[in-house]
Image 1: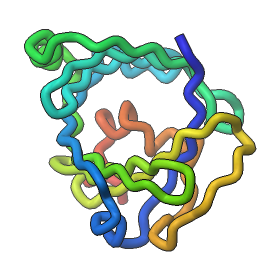
Image 2 (image 1 turned 135 degrees about the vertical axis):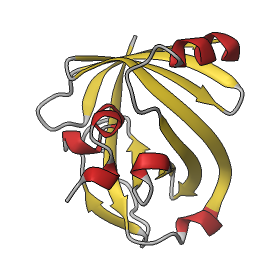
Image 3 (image 1 turned 90 degrees about the vertical axis):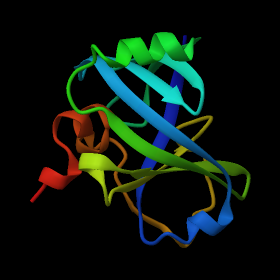
Image 4 (image 1 turned 45 degrees about the horizontal axis):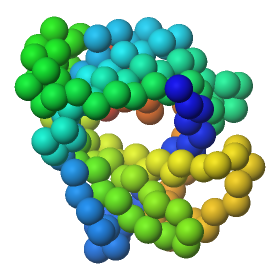
Length: 157
């Protein structure tokens, strides 16, 4: 059990791709996407994971998170019983200053959406912002993957 402290941002352009030191292909679905407790199944490259997340605090930066690695075959089987609209994305890891940004480029029904996340040690921790970082969307539930699985980016108008 741990607390996850992160901030989320939109991206201005794809300049971050040149700065990326690693890319991961991610496929994930939700066994439960209730806002008070999500249960996510993920395959990241060739590893499977089950993750449980609690409700966010008032600022949207902090919430309970529990994650356990499971076999890729088990994860693939669990994806078949997940709620509709599996999320597909490529995650780019970019080191900037003393932090690592995780930038997700979404595909399928969420194509065209890019979201950057940075994990912090405290809610008020200072960090350097790269020029490609855009508007902050921390705490905006419509940018949660669980929301995107129900209401894909392509349907927003």
